[in-house]
Length: 258
Image (cartoon, rainbow, N blue to C red; front, side, top):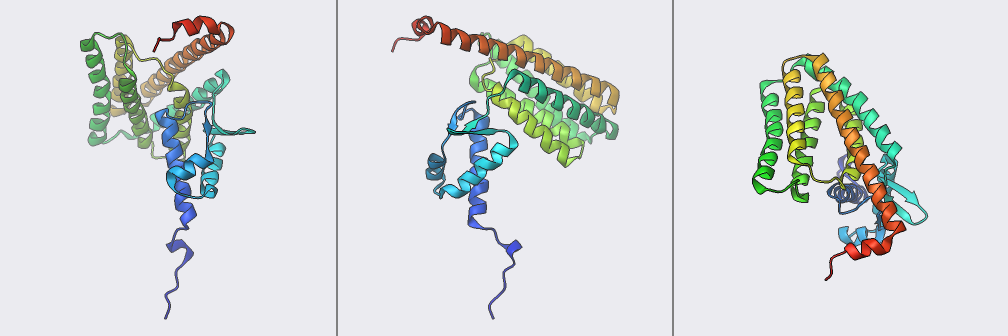
């Protein structure tokens, strides 16, 4: 007798490919391989993943719905954030993370969780020491990638302590959108790393000590500082873009001769 297979016991091949494509495109955006404003080719992705274009198109549609891509008459493009977009995202992030941190502090994390968070805090200090010993003025792109990983992991772990899956998903999506712009982030200097390390340390102390009010105040100040930095960077890049468009000959002279 032929065994009946329920629909829930198997996965349609296109569904699996769509999920692979979704993760693949998201990883390209996070790594900076796909920069803000760049086009995402259905055909190229289909060749990379060895699939038809249908599941690729479905994955792109999901990323458009989540705000990572935008659909234009030229196809799907990696979203380019406006200044107001950055303000809106940080306001949303602050509201959600302040609530989550307060909840996490009221429940007081386990010792094992505090130790994992402390390791993430200390990793930033390791980067600062590397920078100080190198004699360079700021972190290079590879070191900035490490910093962003430490920072993202620290905040993501704190969000997990709030034990609210829906809140975590929205915060992660918000941080991912901010990170698209942050790929153009100039490397942190030693003083900035010291400040961020201090802020993370104070925040961890408040959460571990079960002090919701100080923890909520510290995370709000931390996010507001980050917002100011991103807006300053946005203004810097906009000025650079304007100059390049208005006096291209000058910038041509600054390019290295091969």
